[in-house]
Image 1 (cartoon, rainbow, N blue to C red):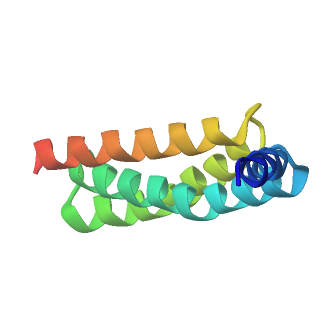
Image 2: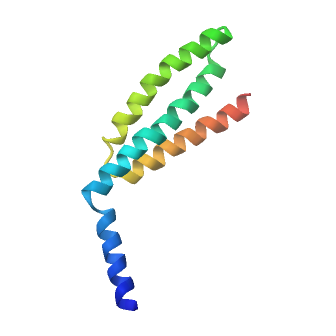
Image 3: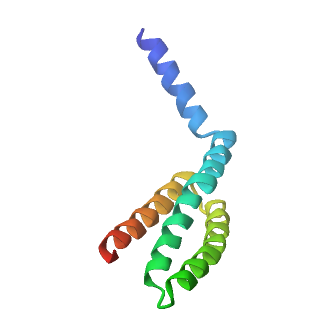
Length: 103
């Protein structure tokens, strides 16, 4: 039993370090965490831009496409895929907390 757990751990460790897992994790981070970052940034910008409500909403929505593109580029430029997840989710959480404080 102990031998099989050790070999299972070794296989899992090998999977985590594989290139396929690295690229898959970065892709999922770019799609989902990047979208979450763009959505929370859009909501925050819509609240804090000093324009008429409809203009600030449209401006924030247009800027969210640039934020999403920058997040996707950034995910594939960091050294480790876990840093991408951590930073995107941290920024999203920070933006959400600021939205809660402002509104």
